[in-house]
Figure 1 (tube, helix red, strand yellow):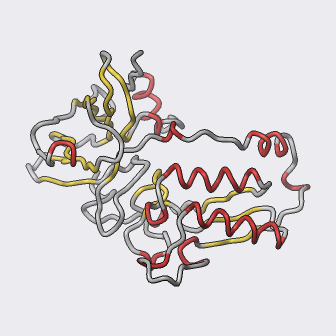
Figure 2 (cartoon, helix red, strand yellow):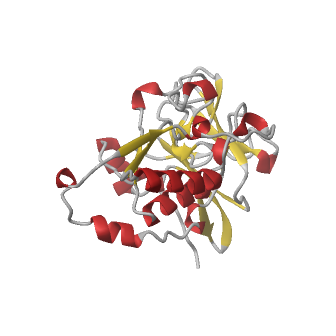
Figure 3 (cartoon, helix red, strand yellow):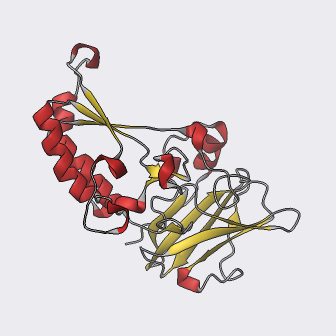
Amino acid sequence: MDHKVFISEDDEYLFGQGTHYEIYKKLGAHCATENGKKGMFFAVWAPNAAQVAVIGSFNGWNETQYLMKKSKSAGIYTLFIPGVGTGELYKYLITTAEGNKLYKADPYANYAEVRPGSASRTTDLTKFKWSDAKWYENTAGKDINRQPVAIYECHIGSWMKHQDGTENGFYSYFEFADKIVEYLKEMQYTHIELMGIAEHPFDGSWGYQVTGYYAPTSRYGEPTDFMYLVNKLHQNGIGVILDWVPAHFANRCTWIGMF
């Protein structure tokens, strides 16, 4: 059965109005099936580009093989590529009106190459099965202003580290989940506020130099590993708050600038 991802006229209209609150389900890279063939659907907004191509590890970074098609009104470029699976590196090659070439990471990617690499990586978030329904049942209808709240602010990369000589000593999302749940329950915190989760190039920024707002940093594992962390916190009755810092995006040529 086909699972086709596409940009509809309604998608274009709502996106143009700034009111498409689920556009992340369409832009970026998403597993899809068309005409019985599995592959990846790519979509990116680049309204002033003369041309956009998808390049990646799946085609030797060939710059002319996969040219994208531009939508009629919203400036969104799309392309379905059969045979592309998860774990592949990719970028968008944007040709400007002046003929310059820009090699850009995907602003809507859910997964990124570990720094210092700057490519996006294909993934499939549907593989993860949530089991935190009880958390939502317990919190539904409650007035947060009348509930006890104790928030623990935490940066994963520096909260606790391995001392065995591994690179940077970072705990993975899995390892962090086990340790932080134990600590939060012992100290009776109700919520955790995670600092700088979105992808970023410089460790010293603590995540406040964003290059991918839809991608939890790959320093600590895959996106589904991060989902495991949130799921486990919820299972243990702990709310999760994520710092979101739209004023701190990195605007170097590889990233969000010049789209």
